[in-house]
Amino acid sequence: MKKLVNLAVLFVCLAMVGCVEKQSTSVATVNGVEISSQDFNNTVNRSLAVLQSQNPQAMKQPNIQDIIGKRVLQDMIIKEVFLQQAKKSKIEATKEEVDSVVSGVKEQFKVNAEGKELSQREQEKAFENAIKSQNLTKAKYLENIANDIIIDKYRRALISSNLKSVSKEDSKTFFDNVSAIYNNDKKKIEELQKVPGRYEEAAVVAARLRATLAPKTRFDLILVYADKTMSENELKQRQQLANSIRKEIKDKSNFGDIAQKYSQQKDARVYFSQMIMVEGMQPVELSSKAFALNVGEVSNVFELFKNNNAKDNSAQGYFIMNVVEKVAGQKFTYETFEKDIEGYINTKRAESLMQQATATLLKEADIKVNKTFEMDKANQNSKTATGTSKK
Image 1 (cartoon, helix red, strand yellow):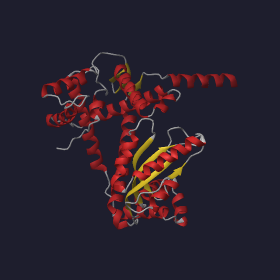
Image 2: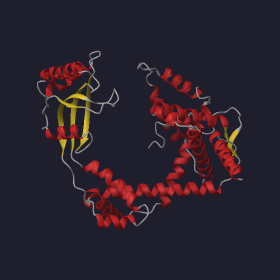
Image 3: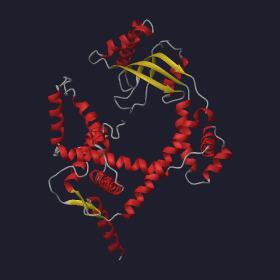
Image 4: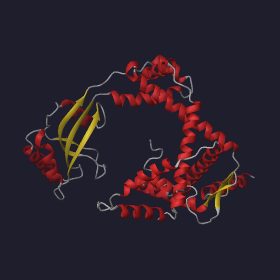
């Protein structure tokens, strides 16, 4: 049986709508069903924590908490209208489906944070602690999983019954549009630009294809870090270190060992990486070098520096490269990509269907929002002040 909810459900379900059983003031109601403040706050805090870990810079945006909060509240409302509609359609989650999701979640508790394998009893305890840590009962947690399954089933059924099949003409027309941009057919491009959205969609696909179909090379790289703010003597020492490393490399067979040896030395500032580059990719100096070498060939030391304002951790200094593999470019033909084009069109149509269904359900639902965001208050005060000033 296919799992209808993936691993992310472990976390989503522990902070989703209706999870917390303590009574609290609602931030909104959907057809009379409350979305509690505590559920909302838990979800916002989780979203902020994820953002902090993935993009700390974004946390510096003005009103970031309100921006995330408005998005979270909208998502919670959408989830609730879909759940209600699914239940009206008599869609249910079977015990087997719920058990399948739970089994998948429990797999993550086979070892602890230190990598020690846990006994069956310890796994179950860790699983239950994860639920309790989010102020949930086991029953409520299982109910949330069931709701996720119900919504997923409803959405799949909605798409299945309304999705228009992709005809040969559909896929061929789309191929021609993408091909025109891919091959820079200016006359065809002008025609596409006359229809709102048509050029933009084809252009996105054409850009992806250029990266997918272009020649590629895979290589190992050693970097001896240096930058132009260093003194002449320091730069000379860094270059000498790079040359010493190169002398120890016999050929591709011991490239990785030498790289590891030096990268582990304290304060050496020697780095090892494995990269794949498309022909012409920035920095061009690096991609050009990769394509100029033969497979299995190790380069001599070469330098690549950025301007003096480059950050201290940017990739610059003295490099040694070992080309591992080269992949020839592919041609963009309809026969080769017919199935991919059909899949792409199907995906876009399914997305459009869900957007339309969401808009319809939101329009028909009785939604009352009780939450006022500080940024909205500030905007309203600003408008009021502006209006008073004009008077």
